[in-house]
Structures are given as structure tokens and as C-alpha cells.
Image 1: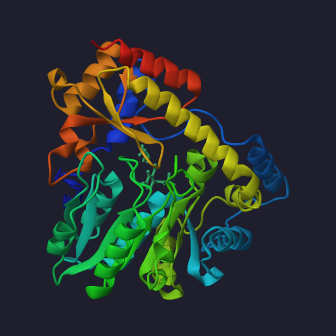
Image 2: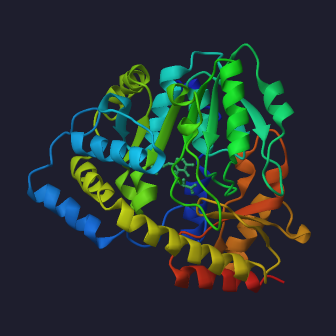
Length: 383
Ligand code: PMP
Ligand code: GLN
């Protein structure tokens, strides 16, 4: 038989999150790798889902998402950020992952160039290639993960169409400053670019860091597709309820892909999230202080290991420097799983321009305190 598999899959890697979770499972390692909580989101959200199921909300939802969820999303965008979105400017997707895929498919023509800041969330790179686009990479450099304004300017050509932003940032925990966002906005205007802003960690900022939605920068709302995830906000990553916000014409374009991929997102999950957003004001302070205490716990304990942490301002990840004798990030990650029973993510897969990722590991702290304590205890044994 000939090879029937499409050429575009020839060099497609297996996601590092699947690789590391599988290895962690095989070696019974404490999993501080893949980014998901190892505990449930709030009990009252279960009740909302059960209620919706018992009310018979079990068949296909409208393709753009249910009215009450879109309403809830519009309300919090207004209350938290002063941004006005109407229903035609919102689409519900199967997680942020689907919103990203749909957006890249909907806006990239073959040969279009897309600016990515590295380290980048891995699906951006593959999504861009699948859509026929060309990633152009700008490096967020250690120790603060800032970027060089000149490097960004130089990465832009007449073929550039999109800038992808992820703020708060996975994996570095960077939260972009107002000045950086305004500079990116000025570039978007100067070169007439669209911005895809992945803000799935919008509610997870620490210490004195503040999240500024890119669409709130003057002149940016009409140029920006904002993507976020109820999975991250409410701690139910497995429910895969995400969404995108943009001007109506762009939401219709994203829907053009969405209708042929998933068509609609799971109905009880959407109803539960619509109701959950109504309790956002009560929930968010608890959510933030829970994660602030997890950050403090892990960060302070990491200081007593050979893995020097870079304190994150947002997200639920910490980057740590690897001691020299451990070799590169891949070797170090595998050694930690096999010999010390701790799984982390080797971040070099999120880089394609610089070698900055080779000397770090990503540690996820969205885990129960007992998991975190066991994980850092094992890291403290590394001599
Ligand atoms: N973007 C970023 C930056 C992420 O970290 C993740 C998942 N952790 C996603 C998108 C995907 O979100 P979802 O689980 O809603 O598909
Ligand atoms: N976003 C999660 C992370 O960064 C993983 C999600 C996935 O496995 N696709 O770890």
C-alpha cells in the first residue's frame, strides 16, 4: 500500500505534554509537567452541570454557543476590563485550543507570516504550519523574559499578517507591561496587523502584577482576537469550554472553521460555565489567593534546590535553571523522571530560534499542596 497519510503530518511532533505525562505515569513520578490541576474545580460548578443535565440541556447547543454563556462572558469583560462585546462578537469553542486552531485556519493564507514570541505555546507553531503560514520568531530573553523592540521590528515584512501574544505567558509566567503592550499595538497599527491574544491565564497574576487585556489598549479592540478558557478560569480543563472575542466579521470567519470541526460545544458544560461566571466576583479572590499560596510554597522550596527559579508574575508555571552537570533540558527532564520521580516539561520544544530553552525546565504548580511538597522534596534530593 502507498503511504496515505498527508504530507503535512510528516514532521508533526507528538505534543510534549502527552510525552511527559506518559513517562510520568510509567515511572510513577510526581507530575509537575502538564498544566492542569490535580484537584477539582468548585463543587458548586458540578451542581450547575447536574442541574443543566436534569433540565434536559443535553442536545446540540447553538453553533456559536448558548446565549447565557455569551452573555456571562460579555458581562465580565465589561465589569473587569470596561470592554463592550455584544453576542455577535463572541464564539464558544472546544477549549482555547479549538479557538486558536480556528483562528489560524480562518486568517492565514499560504505564505502569510505570523510573529510568535518564543517560548511559545506549542499548538501555535503547529497550527500556523497546518494553515500554510510561516512562523517568524522573536525571543523573550532571560532573566526577565523581555524582548528586544528592534528584534520585533526586524521580524516584520510585507508578508506579516498576524502577531500572536500570550499574556500572562506560558511557560515563563511573564506578564507584559503596559509599555510593552503599547509598543506591540504601535507595530500592529504601523504594519496593519491582526493580533491574536491568548489570555487563558487572565485571572492568574501574582504579587503586584496586573493583567491588561490587549483589546483594552487604545485602538486595539477592533484588531484583536482575544481567546480564553473556562477550563483555566474555573479549574475544569477536561470540560474543554473556551471562547474567542472579536469584531463580528472575524467571529463569523472563525465560525466558518468551527462549524466544520466541532459545530457546537458540549451543552451542559456551557450552561454550568454560564452560571459559574455569575459568581465570578466571589470566586476570583479565592482562586487567586489559592494560587498565590501555591506559588509561594513552590518558589520558596525551590530556592533550596539546585534548580534556581525565575519568579513568575502570572500563569501557573515556574521556569527553573538547570544545574550545569545535568546537560540539556531534555536529558534533565528524563533523568528527573527516571531517577528522582519528578516530571517537568523541557521547554526547548517551545523555541525555534534561540537555545535559551536548553538550560531551563518548566514546573507546574497547579497541584495539591501535598503533590507540590512531595515534588519539591524529591527535587531537594538532587545533589
Ligand atoms: N493557551 C495556553 C497558553 C495554554 O496554556 C493552554 C492550555 N494549558 C491553552 C491555550 C489551551 O486551553 P484549553 O485547555 O482551553 O484548550
Ligand atoms: N496547556 C497545558 C500546558 O501548558 C497543556 C494542555 C495540553 O496538554 N494540550 O501544560
